[in-house]
Amino acid sequence: MYRFEAHYIDVVSGVDIIKEIEFNPGFFPTRKDCYLYAMERACGLEEKEEAFHSLELVSS
Image 1 (cartoon, helix red, strand yellow):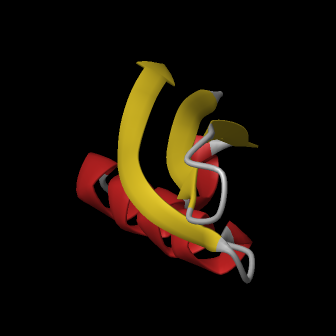
Image 2 (cartoon, helix red, strand yellow):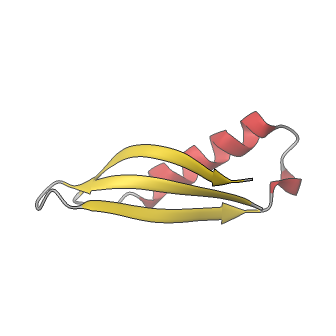
Image 3 (cartoon, one colour):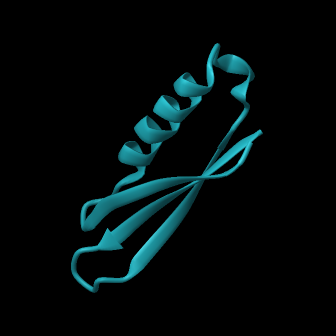
């Protein structure tokens, strides 16, 4: 199981927001594909008044 933390900043209040992304790496042929998928998910989770900041691998 891969676990990432997507970090965002609320552009109105400046508060840091962390969202977990977790998935089974068995669906992806390479580690790079796992990272690309996590980045795609992180961008998709960004809400209206949030700015995506970074993506961090927590565990694999």
